[in-house]
Image 1 (cartoon, rainbow, N blue to C red):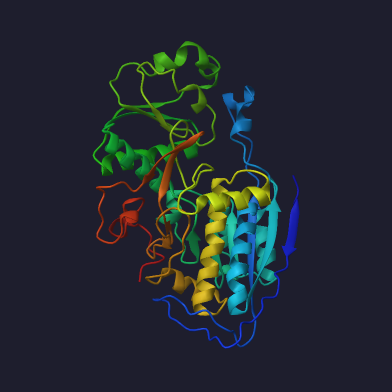
Image 2 (image 1 turned 135 degrees about the horizontal axis):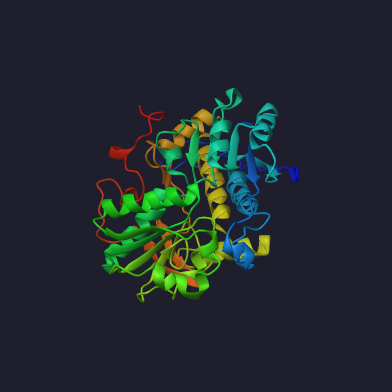
Length: 411
């Protein structure tokens, strides 16, 4: 599929409020102000279409339940643009959003290079990890600031981290830690781990193993899912047989491409809850969240997009709102200044999660609560009570500073 869309949404010029002065520091709340001259902030978003899901789900038409809408990520960016413009009117800041929607076969690196040549310096990127790294390493991107709104790979926050990348998407480590904390609170200490056959499934499974060790849980069975021939029989007798032979409290499924997980709930040998990629899922946001002003936020999104919000939408919204907050505090659209502002203590945004979110300077990850939800509703929110931290309980999710393998950001 070729390049589908590259459109620019030109920002409305903001009215200057007389008699105010832009002031404040990175460490304190900014004073809303008149800008000596209007500042226009360009933000680019590149979103790449995800490949079709593989496996039994496709054969049975189940994949449609998990397929992302064509405008995933873009709608969240548009809502954040409107929010930034609301604040910008008071301080003389205008915002433009340049959208680039890529097909599955399109070259994201070439598209990013083109946008950088046109003057893009603040980019929100929703592409696979390898392409994200290639974009971050472009010579043209050295003076840019890139926000990852789609790739969950732990390596991007560890050995493959980049100083010019901020991660608005959850990491697999945060996802796994959130589930491990919930399981600990429920005393579900024995896990049956089922791992799919893709590299992404194996990476997610390794995050679950790490989380189990971190929180003192025990994986009593660790099995790779069935091959294609066995998969076609899975809805018959294979799932009960597959899950025999161990005593477990929780079945944890690592199936990022939704190829088999849907056949596991209610079919296991022991009657146990199922979590991970199916059943109870750790997510960055969920359409049923209503507290902390989220109901109004959700209503605005549905009115704009005509559908419920998705995780990629929320990650893009978070990235652009962080940019807006940093621009308000610094009075500048300079990527280096915005990056420094985001890493400074005290810069936070309200994100309808009950706790403000901020950026970890040691790996560029946006620290934030993680919801535990099933398709019909919200169950809980991590971090949970009792998981204390000397800085913030949010740092109990994912890679903490003492364990980071990110060298590019060490100071």
